[in-house]
Image 1 (cartoon, rainbow, N blue to C red):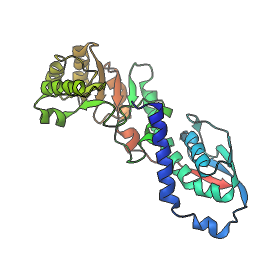
Image 2 (tube, one colour):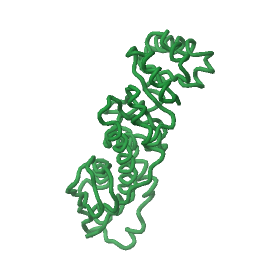
Image 3 (spheres, rainbow, N blue to C red):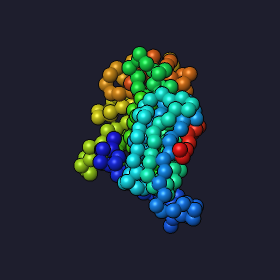
Length: 285
């Protein structure tokens, strides 16, 4: 996983790029009709239900847009919210509040949707040892936000990108000439380049599980698109020699049965690629 410093850099890049994209050479709507000296106050109003995410991000946006804006947070990230809840107040330059408005809303609506879906999975897995993981199936350019929302919702982050973990999937294995060759070549690559990266290997059937287990140094086996019976058999074969992860179209309805097969993790791209934004608004008061 990426370091805290790397994460902070990603968040700062997202804010900088989003403001560049949205504001350009100026918020001419506000500049045209609101005096630069005008001040005001607004509230973040919830018009939906779910798990709140993005408050801390919103505070960073306000700070970036105008350090003189003052905020009062009433509800924190990770809280259950309902229709008509007020999350925070922001006060200061009216132009600055309007400049930040859309970025704050876009981020919080999406992050809250992801946190809500993640919490639903986490609740389904409660009482088992299995944790829910996200994937790289994220919106280009805002991966850090979406993975942050997963954490707020009670899930855990998988690798951040292609650079912080080795994951040998079906195409890598086929192009490399097989599982054993892919693992051997990967371990040699890591030694040659003095890299310390964990190795995950995808298995498509029980025979591939057996072949993976013949190699040392595999951190986790990805048990991909297995049914319940074969997943249980896979977990028995692995027998704690490395971590286990189930994936492949796992839904809220099927998550618990897969967890009961004994896997350490379930990964789901649906946490980030199949959500409907929550409804919030920033209202002047």
